[in-house]
Image 1 (cartoon, rainbow over the protein chains, first blue to last red):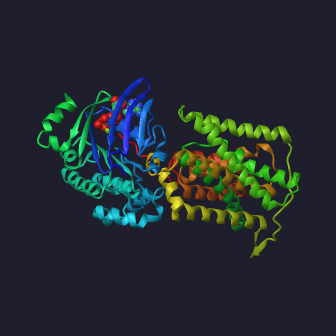
Image 2 (image 1 turned 90 degrees about the vertical axis):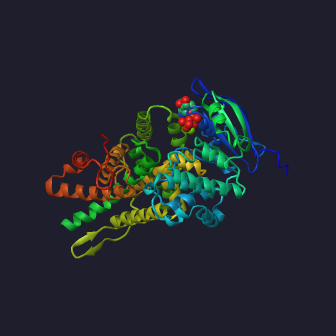
Image 3 (image 1 turned 45 degrees about the horizontal axis):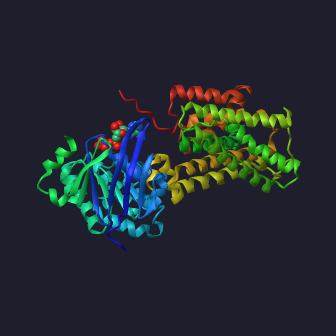
Length: 239
Length: 289
Ligand SMILES: Nc1ncnc2c1ncn2[C@@H]1O[C@H](COP(=O)(O)OP(=O)(O)OP(=O)(O)O)[C@@H](O)[C@H]1O
Ligand SMILES: [Mg+2]
């Protein structure tokens, strides 16, 4: 296999809500095993870009490829079946079902035969969830719910894992825990694209970042090059 | 007397329970209140009538064919008439379901006129006597069939992985899409299942009642009353509501006035909505202030 070939390739996508064009030609790539972080101010179109990749919104122009296969404008349940698995900003869990049922449902379509192995694997990443496996999700804290959301996605054996603000609304302790888990997933070879406002977390786990502003990618680089210079990145995002 | 009324009320109520449950299945899955449902219940009854009386087929295969036909009809409605209008105002669903029901009713009327169609009896089971209580063969067949069907339904819903998926889609459609469920196809299936379950009710009463095209309205209001009583959206509540409604009708008819039977449903809806709007098992709406 050619390791330089991107597993996810986004090529000139444009997305509009009504007359308003939110993405005006966005390009980027993610290599196998890489973690790319998408940065940008509120409302800059980060979630929109991710939803275009997962198929929740359609593109008017451009191409999206998953391992060479064109997936732009496929409905979301189909991109999922191909391995594009998203943890959405709103988490979208099943509140009345237990932690374990939520997790198992993640494997229902893509990895049913290995469901119990996946479940053990997820509980190893999230010991906190193992303790609460029979608790209804609606009774969990926000941080625990975020863990269920990530765990449910991991259950599906994603080829590309899309994370929309995994630290959103969480306390510093949970941000740390989530960061550790994302790092562990990365160690185990996961390919990820994440949206993150928390630069501390973003720079701890990502290999590379790009910045979205006014519907286009305005900047980017490898995390290593900016390790001590977050200020420069912050300027690019907001100024 | 009281026991006798209770027995016939429960057997009648079993039919209402099935109608209310089938309405609820569609409602929970799609948020559509199917105002045409009474006519589709009748569709099941007319289906067996045509197959048994006009084509001379045996009852059981006819019943299965009628159920399959109504299932297909549900999918057709979902794909052809409900999905295309989902971007419009929500009341469009109500208008659409009323219109579909009336078109269905009008079609049966234009074929059969308004005449009453008797069907030969099919369940020929002798009644059982318990003391001076008589349990008719019809009551046994109806309650037995409905009981088996309901037991199957609740086992599938709460105990199987398919049931878990259905519960999941009920709770979050976006969440369901995020685990690879085709929600549009799910809606089709729920419409199919709803109409098929309603058809079973129609089929069960076909051999014991006089069929005519306007019978559907009565089914619909009884389904609504059972849903209201049980709490909108509650599956168990729909069943309990149906049974209680059946018994209430019998008591009201015997002890107060037979004319009450036909308006019991309306009275139940009025009283429940005023006294306890969430019904017996519904979730109480939280009013944020
Ligand atoms: N369904 C929609 N219909 C119309 N406009 C929308 C819709 N969803 C998003 N928008 C608009 O598109 C723009 C980009 O939204 P998006 O959610 O992609 O931003 P974001 O970068 O993820 O922001 P945040 O950091 O706040 O999550 C915003 O101006 C938003 O109001
Ligand atoms: Mg967002």
